[in-house]
Length: 267
Image (cartoon, rainbow, N blue to C red):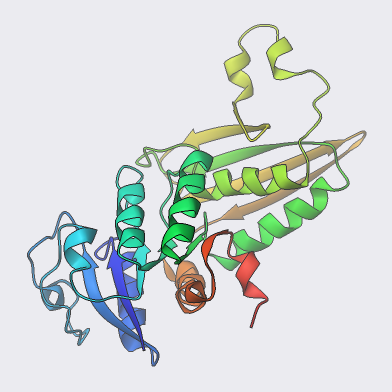
């Protein structure tokens, strides 16, 4: 039985994830973290769950006083790194669903995970359509030399770009860097209008009401264009199956694995 602690347990993804864990045959929910609901009884927050978690913790460090095998983090950009490092230092495997971590953060997390001999799986997006977009975009980058990314999210999302787009830029850069006709630094006018350069790729972040999470990868070639796009709806269901898979797989690794696709085909 895999003992799981969920940070962000009362959130958009965290709440249905806790329900899925509690109903599974191979997992048990041993801890729940929520800064806004700290001290409240978990059964009152999610009636009928049948969990024995008890009171909701205000921090990961407090929650991990109860033994856990895996911490799942669905919190926010300002606390995710602190949560992850706290779990690693206690020898707990980690699944990261939160955004806001940089490549430098991931390098630090990888080093700490290897030192403490635990696994970490981080995915900018656990939805299968987002994973497929990433796979298709990396294939397209082998044949097309120019592309840019558009990052869509709600007006309430404070961090940019999203974890989905940051991970996509990282994975595309592993294939190769785009070759723009006119380098961004040679732009006449306002270079900032060309977007931010992430891993050598131009990224344009849009934050408006009506969006949840979306990403568009646009590839251009002479007299032709290829557009790949993923859009998430308001429900959290697409993220649950991928997160559950990561929980089951994370103990098989030591160090950081970036991207759900890197574990999907390993049975």
